Image 1: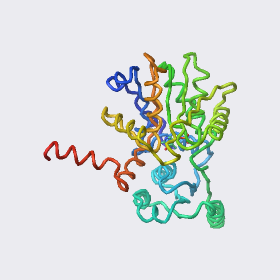
Image 2 (image 1 turned 135 degrees about the vertical axis):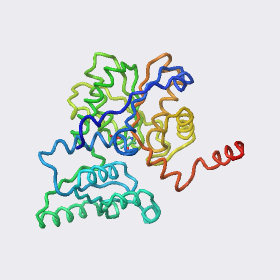
Image 3 (image 1 turned 120 degrees about the vertical axis):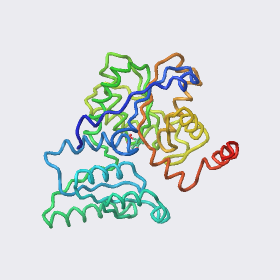
Length: 317
Ligand SMILES: *Cc1c(COP(=O)(O)O)cnc(C)c1O
């Protein structure tokens, strides 16, 4: 919960990038919401905390070591001076080398790294321990996947769609609360807008249902969900050459993208454009964040190292 006027992010035109794709391109920059590089989890967590009658002494949640949700909750807790304990899962290798854990240490929050099978028991133990010492506790659902987050996206979705009047909205779709909220907003809008969620992890069968449920949370009754799983690139956290090409194209036009989330969504947009499905349309790309993912990847596998050395040589610097 931060001051509501801080929850605005710019809506920007990207004319040159749009021209290369034969579309009018607008970008909703939720990567610029008021915590560094955090993205859509800021709106979701803010809504989740606002829905509480009072703030607790301790916030607990779970996610992967490199989870945007967990680090955003850590930023909120630190800013609000609330204790925070994160239950993280990941490999020992990730735990020993991840810049994500260094960041959490820097923020001063507590975290425990466990195997996926131990998450539930660990959370129960932490809740019991806090309550027996008289603390109030709130457990935030993993990914902040909750009705509050979905409603927050329906509200901002309505404002942005009214202002931008796009023919299409593209975004990265994970647990589905963001996509469901924006789809609910589009269904209510007088502007006819197709909202296309590009899946970053789930197959169509599994993902569609979660997005449809989130749209219902946001108040939609008959809402057509478009959930495209053709750009998964092998699953969550993996990437392929269309993802890398989309990421490179974005950066070259001043639009920072990552390979886990926004790069896949943008690869989807590029593919629709190349197939002529968007010719002459006004397209809104909803940037959901993900820059921490990009930076962590640079720290480990350096996917752009060869290009970088090449341009250094060319520049002679
Ligand atoms: C979590 C996340 C998403 C997916 O949001 P959902 O509401 O879970 O679908 C997309 N992009 C980024 C950068 C994220 O961190």
